[in-house]
Length: 204
Image 1: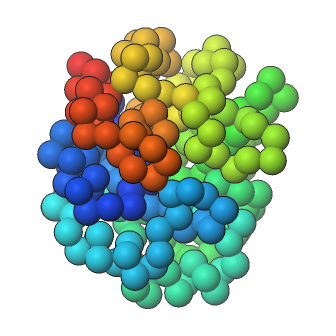
Image 2: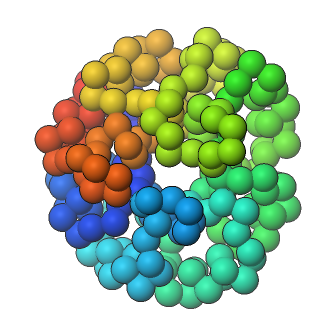
């Protein structure tokens, strides 16, 4: 079964079209002002209207106020929410939308406990732990830290590129992969050739 691919940090219509044409299964939109990939709510609403059928929209939030998330959802009908901060299971569930929970992984991370705590999540997204940064760093973590019992259900992220995605899928066997900086020409701007290479190699 081919791995699913999410392209995160979409900010432009041409990048949306390039990702979808290359076979992306999901697109991520960042609603976090500190991120260089932050997208205004009105822009995100316009982008979602251009999405083709059967491609999921994912909204990324980091310790956002519930009122802000609700305001986004009124204008942007996201399919999935992605929480990248210190949110509790109750925080993630309160909006009545399916969600995924991001975990920043280092040797002290108990992923089995995380999976148990967030059992209502559609999946866990595993990213590299970089102090003081919520994600999108382009750093990878030690994939051997992923328990074999979880590998087939997780979303692998962190430092993935067209050059290493084949090895990542072969070694980890994740349900899905997530990439942002690894397919960019500059922060927030995707490279269509890298997008196509990444998705093709991931699904091969």
